[in-house]
Length: 276
DNA sequence: ATGCGGACCTGTTAGC
DNA sequence: TGCTAACAGGTCCGCA
Image (cartoon, rainbow, N blue to C red; front, side, top):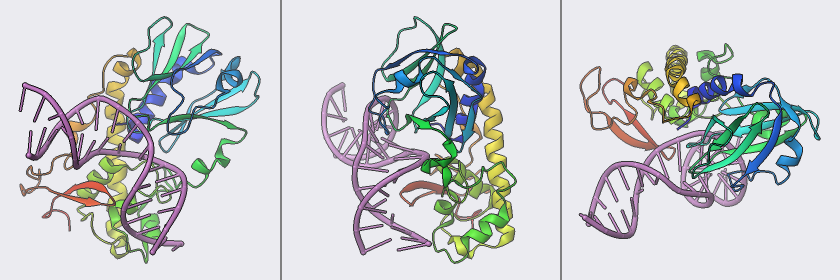
C-alpha cells in the first residue's frame, strides 16, 4: 500500500529511466481507473518528452513537453495498490497491468493496480492550479509543517486528533499507518479532540511524524532495487511498526495490550497506557 | 464551516 | 474444507 514514503521511493526509482525519454507509444488496457484514463491520452503523449519527475503529497507528476499538446503534466496516484515500474519492451503484461508508456530506449513505464483506486490523468498547463493539488497543505518533511501549525489549525476543533492529522489541508501524506505510529511516538491518545491538545504536545507530534516518515523513506530505499528490477513486493517498513496492525499484542514500551478502535472509519491501534 | 458517512475496487483474511 | 462476509486503503462527494 503506497504511502508517501513508497511514492517517493517510486519517484526516485523510475526517474533515471524516464527523465529525458521520448514517449513512442501509449497502451491502455484498462481505462476504468478511479479517474478514467483520458481517451486521447495516446494522441497527446506520443512524441512528447518527459521532464523532471516531481512528487506532491502522494501524487506523482510527470511533466511532458513537445508532441501535439505542448507543455502538460501527467498526474498519477497509486491509490492503495498501484505501482509503477520499468520493464523491458517485449515483457508481457500481467493481470492488472493497465497502462504502458513505451519509451524510446526500449523501456516501458508500466502502471499496475489491482484495486484500481489509483489513476493516471492529464493536466494541461499549470498543474498547480488543478483542484487536487491547489488545496493541499504543506509537505510533512518541509519546514512549513510544524507543531505550531497543528496547534493553530486545531483550535476550536472537536475532531479527533488522528483524523485531523490525516486531513490533507493540514499536512499531506500522513496516512493511517503513519498517523497511528506518530501518535504512539508522541504519546497522544488518537481519540483526543484536536482542539484540546497543547502546543508542546503538537511539537512532539510533528517531530514524530517527520521522524517516522523519514525513516520509512530510508527503508524504502532498500526496496528500491527490487522495485526497479521489477520483481516482488517490497518488504516495507513493517518490522519497525509499533502499533499499526498490532492490536491484541503487547505494547513494546509498557507491555499492555494494544487496543483497536475505529476513528473516522479507520482502524486505529493505540496503547491505552502510553497514549493519553 | 465542520464532521460524518458512502462510494469506488478487488485480493486477502476472518468467521461460519 | 469450502463458502461468504468483512476488511484494507486514499480521496472525493454529498448531506446534516
